[in-house]
Length: 132
Image 1 (cartoon, rainbow, N blue to C red):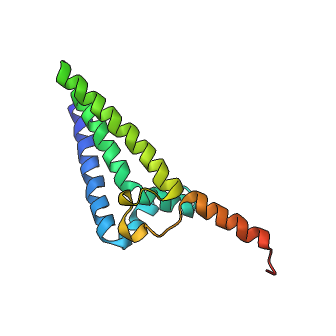
Image 2: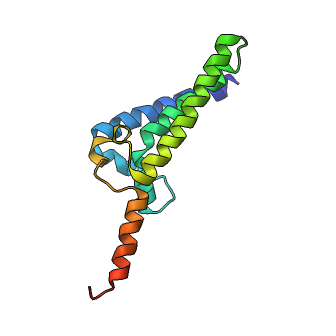
Image 3: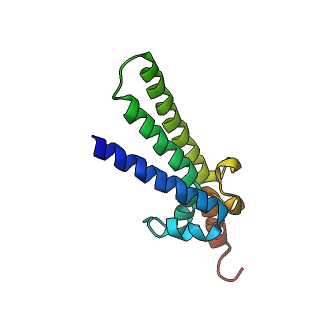
């Protein structure tokens, strides 16, 4: 159990470190994009939501850690961890699909369209035809 928990904490620390670099340096986006299997638009959405993903993973750490203890404080901490995970999941979907809320998106990626807007633009471009 200690090895699993230690691996989770080290992995989350690495993810948080890379997200800090992503917010400061636009070139780090390629590091994240290289490991994702989706299309370009979805990969960019996933990269934009990396900070929210890191927050959700820290919520998982809280839930696992407090699951080892007993008592009302541990129960409240588990509830808080679950709320962090659920709120992060909702925020992540909004960032991927709509690129909002802007405070959860790295500054250099805030002008990008969300997946739905990019898909709408691609369909509109296809309807105009080749000669338009």
